[in-house]
Amino acid sequence: MTTQVFKIADSFKKNVKYTFCPGCDHGVAVRLVAEVIDELGIRENAIVAAAIGCSVTIYDFLNIDALESPHGRAMAVATGIKRAKPDKFVFTYQGDGDFASIGWAESMHAGLRGEKISSICINNTTFGMTGGQLGPTTMMGQVTTTSPTGRNPEYYGYPIKMAEHMALCDGVAYSARVSLDSVPNIRKAKQAIKKAFEVQLQGLGLGFVEILAGCPTNWRMSPAQAHDRVRDEMMQTFKPGVYKDVTADIK
Amino acid sequence: MVVECLTGKKVLMKGNYAIAQAAVLAGCECYFGYPITPQSEIGEYLSGKMQELGRAYVSAESELAAINMVIGACSTGAKAMTSSSSCAVSLMQEGISYACTDELPVVLVSVMRGGPGLGNIYPSQGDYYQSTKGGGNGDYRTIVLAPSTVQECADLTYKAFYLAHKYKNPTILLADGLLGQMMEPVEFKPYPYSEIENSDWALSGAKGREPRIIRSYGPLAEDRCEFLEKLFEKYKAIEENETLWEENDTDDADVVLVSFGSTSRNVNTAAKLLRAKGLKVGTFRPITLFPFPSKRLAELAKRVKMFVSVEVNMGQMIDDVKLAVNGLVPVELVHKGVGAPPDPEDIAAQVEGLL
Image 1 (cartoon, helix red, strand yellow):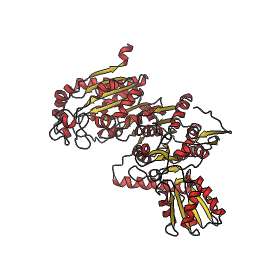
Image 2: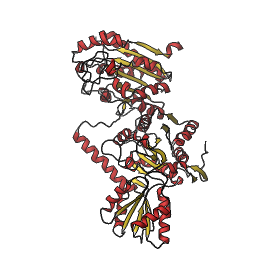
Image 3: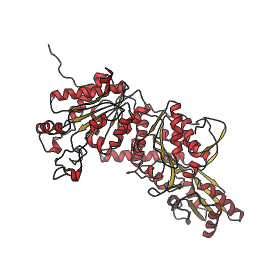
C-alpha cells in the first residue's frame, strides 16, 4: 500500500522548463501559490497580473490566464481587470523592485482604494533579473553592484518595510510578512497566501503577502548560505508576522 | 453637471461632455482617469454617470496608473477608456506601446493643450506627432481620429470604440482644448456599430480551455520579427479599410489647404474668402490621422499646384503631407504655435502671400 505525500498542484503546468536560478525561492513561492489556488478551487476563475523582473515568468508555471504588466504597474493592471470583471479572482505576483520602487504609488493606492485583489511580493533585497543592483529593500550595509561599499543612509537612504506600510492602508484587509528559509516558515507562508486570497473571495479588501526569499545568484552565496542570510539578517530587519487581518476582528 | 441620455434630439453641449456621453452610449464599461485641464469635464461627467449605471469609474492615482487600468480592463474584452491631455498623455506612452503589442482595444481621448512640457491650457495641435508617431518605444501605430465639431466628437467616440475592438488596437480620439470647451448642438444617435466578438482571446479564467497569456515580451529575435510583420499587416489593413477624409472644392483647385480638427473650420472659411477673390482654392481635412489619407493626397498632387498645411503647432502634419505629395508640388506651412486657430482672414492673407 502506498501513501501519496506530495502532489504537484493542478494549477502548476506540466512538463515546464524550470527557469529560475538554482536555490532561488521563487520556485517555492510559485508552488505555494499553485497549491493555494487548487485548495480554494479557483483555478478556472483566476487571472494573474504578472510583473517585470524574475517574477514575470509566473505565467510559464501557472495553469491560469495571465496578463503581463509593464514594470511597476501590476496593481493598476489588476485593478482594471477586477473592476471590469468583479466576479474573477485577480492577483499580482511581483518582486520588491516592481512593487515597492517603480510601482509603489500603484501598490499603495490599490490598498487605499481597497481593491478586491490579492498581491504576492517577493522580497530578496535586490533587483534580481538585472544582476543584483540596489533596490528599495536592500538592507543597511548590503553590498550590491550599485552599492559597492554597502548601503549607507547618507548616500542611499533606507529600506522600505512593505508589509507594515500596506497594513496602514485602510482598504487593506490582510497584510503579512513570511519567510521561505525553513520548512515551518514555508508552511506559514502558505497559510498567509491562502488568507490573502480568501479576503478577496470574501470581498473584504486587498490581501497582501511579502515573502522573504533567497537570491543565491545575486548574493553570491550557496542556497544554504542564502537561507541562513534570510534567517539571520533579513528576518531581523523585516520581521515576519501578520500586520493586519480584518477577519481577526470579525471572529 | 449631469446631462440626460437623449437620442434623436439635439442638445447644446460642451465637446468634453459630448465625448463622455458618447462613451456611455457606446457601452463603455470602465473609465479610469486623472484630472487635467482642458478635459477634466470628461471624468467629472463619467464619475456620476458610471456609478448611476453600475459601471466602473476609478479616480486613478496617476496617468500611468490610469492607462494600465485600461489595459487590465481591456484584457478581459471590456470596453474601457481613459482621457487626458498633452503633458499627461506623455505619461501614458509606455502603456500605449504595451497595449499595441498586447493588441488590446484601448480607447484614449486626448484633448490637446499647449506644449511642450507643462505648456499652457490654451488649445493646440501640438500633439500630432505624439499621437501619430508615438512617444512610446518600438514599432507601433495607434488609430487616430480627429474631430472638428462637437457632433464629430460624439460620432468619432463611437467609432473609436468600434475600431479599437475591431482591430484590437489602441485608438486615440484627438480633440483639442477648443473642441473640449466649446458648446454646440449635438445629436446622440444610437451606437451604430456591431459588437465585436472577443471570446476567442479575452481573459476570463481558463475554464475548459488552455490558459491565455497576454504579453508584450518576445524573447526570441526571430519570433519578434514574425510578430512585427503580422502587426504591420494589421496596420496595412487598417489603412486600406478605415482611411477617412473630407475634401471641398478640390476638383478645379490650384491650391489645396490641408488641416485637421478645429482648425479646419477656419480654414474652410478662409478658402471661401479666397474663392470670392477668384482664387481656385480647395480644402482637405484628414479625419483619420493614422491611417493618413496619403493616397488621395498623392492623386491630388498630380493636378494641384500647391498644398498649404494649416496647423496650430510649429508644423507637424506637414511632414505627412510632404511624404504623400512626394516632391511633386510645393507644400507650404501656415501656422500659429498655440491657441485658438488663426482667423480665416489671417489664413487667407497668408495663403495669398504664398501665391
